[in-house]
Image (cartoon, rainbow, N blue to C red; front, side, top):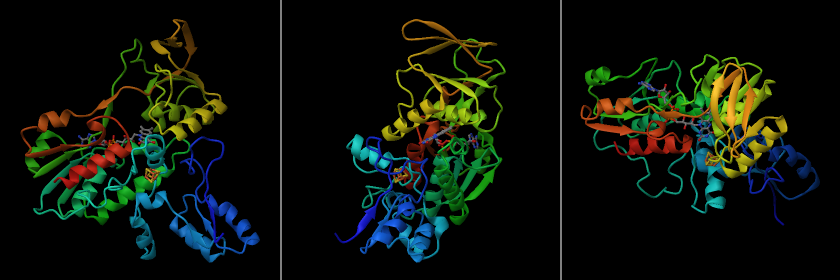
Length: 393
Ligand SMILES: Cc1cc2nc3c(=O)[nH]c(=O)nc-3n(C[C@H](O)[C@H](O)[C@H](O)COP(=O)(O)OP(=O)(O)OC[C@H]3O[C@@H](n4cnc5c(N)ncnc54)[C@H](O)[C@@H]3O)c2cc1C
Ligand code: SF4
């Protein structure tokens, strides 16, 4: 044996090959000082170790080498950027596990949620300089819009990004709030930081509309306007104590007893967020499974945490009515139950915010739609769509 490699992972959970998002960073460094004190061969520490932390650990004699896997998928130029001190340009891995899930569970090869070029490095996925410089308007400052603006600007286009809110980020601003989601904060910060570096003209607090675009006459428009919440077709859904999951994550107060309608990723993470605040939470999901679209290993961890925290989960159950006393639901077997709730949180029904596309069709010569405004999916899909739209400009 020539060296020892210490990979940080969670034992006891099938197919979880790496520390998932909620687990502490720098896992290998927790044990490497002890291992180093009892062996004479080199020790390689791993487990989402940041370059600065790795550097410090080597200087302090806690490890001989730092091993990286996912960090290099997210940004293959990480070592070069770290060595030249350009840390703010390193695109961080969000720990989502899509890369390993794709390979191990689906057998469809490597990918990366934040780096659409992974696996296609030698192909047209490369960022080449544009032959003709265009004036590009990007509408929406979520991950899809920010990635489109970043890549379009890198290609030499003159890019202005319009965001109707005062801050950039779109749904990422709520996605970072639940427990175990802090990894996303570093990625959000990365995206925001790249815009001034790439000289994107960012206009926040500006809601783009047809008149504005007609006046600006850009050569190309990228629409990245995300989703709008629509009230589900349930009697009582317009009552004042019915809130959206996003407004709750933005800080809206809830009663102690909360019923969440929708047990997808957003519903489950909002449940964990509220339960941590001491609320009594019931999740009502029409399907037979919760968080069905999540990466398998992370879904099992989230389910286990919700169970341990005492969140009540009703699957195969449909919400029939919202009343002042709570919600009435019908189970798969036909049983009708009443769940007491002072607040009802809606975590279903986001629909693509695509009104601008209909208005701008025929007015703008080159029009692209990217991200959730086409089809609500996730970060990987939004970022990839923004990247490809920018490559095609
Ligand atoms: C709580 C929560 C947790 C999530 N967790 C995950 C996760 O773990 N993994 C994952 O893959 N996905 C997750 N998602 C989903 C993910 O955040 C979205 O898929 C992604 O943000 C979509 O990006 P987007 O840029 O297309 O849209 P958005 O992020 O919705 O951004 C659209 C932006 O456009 C702006 N806008 C709209 N209209 C206009 C206009 N006329 N003019 C100017 N600006 C406008 C909006 O204000 C918004 O900032 C989560 C979502 C939520 C709510
Ligand atoms: S897919 Fe997710 S976990 Fe894998 S390298 Fe990319 S960001 Fe990291």
